[in-house]
Amino acid sequence: MLLKEATFRNLLYKMIIVKSKKDAEYQERLFNIDSIDLDNIEEEFSNIPIENEVNAMLLFPYLDYTQGLSFLMVANGLIEGNTVTFYERPNFDNFQIIRKGTLNDKEIFYLKDLLINNDFDLEYYVNYAIDRTESYRGDAEVETLRAFSEIDSCRNEDFPDDFLAYFFKEGLNPEGMWVRGKELKRDHIVTELLNQPNQDFGINAGDTVKIIVYEDESGEISCIADLR
Image 1 (cartoon, rainbow, N blue to C red):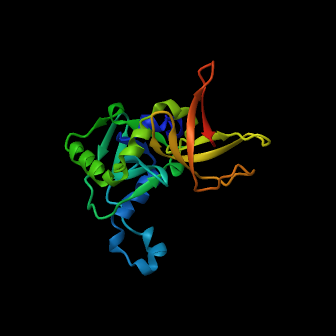
Image 2: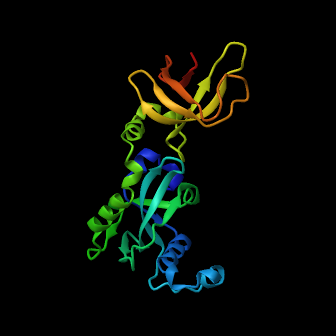
Image 3: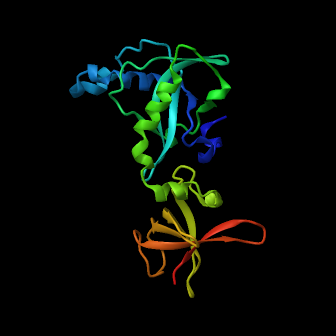
């Protein structure tokens, strides 16, 4: 399976393995970036030695409220057949993040898909990933809205905190715009408007907008702005 074929809900907060020799080698060099002259980084980076043969990365998917679906680099490894050998990290100094757009065309595996070497302390690395990304789960209202699966069809898969809402006003054409969820109420969603409207709806980018979730007769879900 390619990463772009997986929904954010099937990825979020679950360790995955991404197969990519080029990306794994790049991340391996980043582990040792402190050993080079930062004033001459472009020339020296490619010369950082790679101690282990790698073609896979152990990643932890999480949501950055403004940057979207992101992946914490946890460890590097080598996939051979139906097994993967993960290597202990040389250090934990760097907080290495990969954004979804760079991984969309990469092959992914869940932990259950491959046999993992017994000498790799997976539990330790899972706890490391959870601890390092804890601050991104600090807003209880946002987390509640993230768990609200009814609007998944409206969400931006790369930026799941953002979703498409339709705006209606007498005398104007309907307009679809992106909003960012802030809080789930009993009968509406509190959001921030991300786009500047092309028409005069009486609102601007950055304004707070109330969104109503509407289900039509066929069961299709739409998000409608309540401009009253």
